[in-house]
Length: 407
Image 1: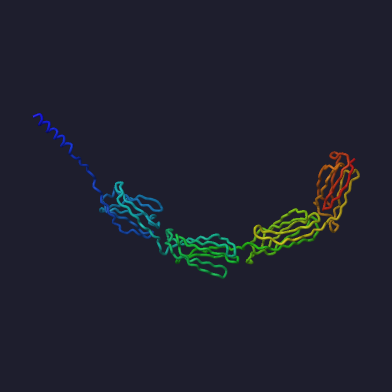
Image 2 (image 1 turned 45 degrees about the vertical axis):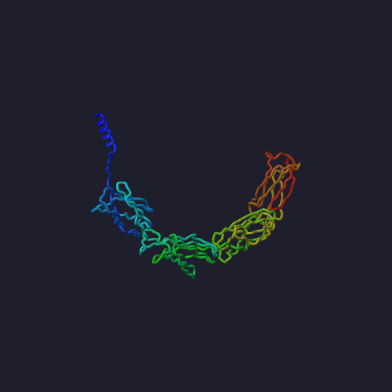
């Protein structure tokens, strides 16, 4: 009897271990896309419809080049309607969507938006550079982008006509867009002037664009000079002038071109003066030298051209002068300094005095300028001690040596 009870208990335990537990699951929610159209024109009204009775638990995610948005449906009669916002259907290209119900993705797809080709097209046109050099080696580039009313570039191979006018010539060139743009280069003509350029796509025409054609690199040129006389008086002005400077095609160089006139005197010293061109001619001026010399003048346009070399001679305006001491030898007077007609030289003629002692050692250099034809040096007792000094006076290229005994 006890063995029978044991068998019953073991059987009951085995029966309990073999029982299976049933977990209840929520049934799958059926979703079906009702909208069959996938291709639209930019600006169309787009609505996606789905068959489902769980509108409150559904939302649609849309994304394209402008960003991502989450849309809620309008539910009616087991139909979910999602209206795609205008910015998403005004942007040409793919627009991806994905439907979620209770946080689970149930469906996804792509809408394809094409540009709105119609009457309200526009054409964006760019030109540069706006200034080029004549001769054909330089060019401007025209870039045209035909777009629809929403700024979507039109498809590749869209026809664009580029138009160019220069003086009496009018040229049209047919282009086709590639990678959204149509472009062409516009080589410079051999003459200076204005290139007028425009572009057209269908009935849409761009505004007028302008590229200015300037003279090319100038060629070597000639210079001349003009002066009142040939004396080195340090007062009159000599004028250097170019002929009309032009490029290899005969175009006059632009106004404001800088021309440098370099002067080398007989001592190898260099002077420079500059002028800017006006109507192709540049001129510059220099004062006459103070003493007899000759100049070699060459003009340059930096990195482009140079002129012939002129040789100009200057004669001495002052042929001689006196060096006089006062009674006490404390005042030295140079002059009167007389110019080529016997007139006094203009004020400001430089005078240099070199003083050495009786041993030949340099004591001092002094300088002054003429006034009323005279130059004066003062050797006051408070600054100059007694003794013998040698004085070397130089002015107008004439050098004189005197000895003075200061008491």
